[in-house]
Image (cartoon, rainbow, N blue to C red; front, side, top):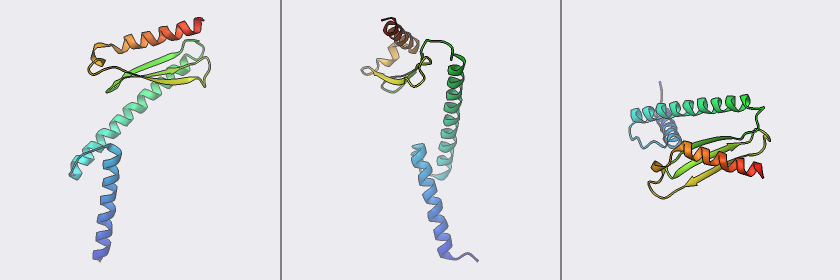
Length: 127
């Protein structure tokens, strides 16, 4: 038979694990079922990010003979996150974040930003 103390210890342990899930997933769920749903969504998002990174890695490997830098641009809450990978010299990778004023992100296309960064890099390499 399980003692009261053992039951309490199990309950506290389970509660601690749910708190870890809540903090890792940034969930504000109060009940356990909602927390599990949030966790499942979070895991799905992570899977998609891993898939995208694997695609980026494959793309970079396929371009290994080319000299052009690889630029990826993603929108963020405050502007754009820009990653530049230099295939020519592998250790030279860097990340830029471009921020605008409020609501300016909607008026600028990701493709336009990517083309501007590529043009600026091309100008630098041409010097």
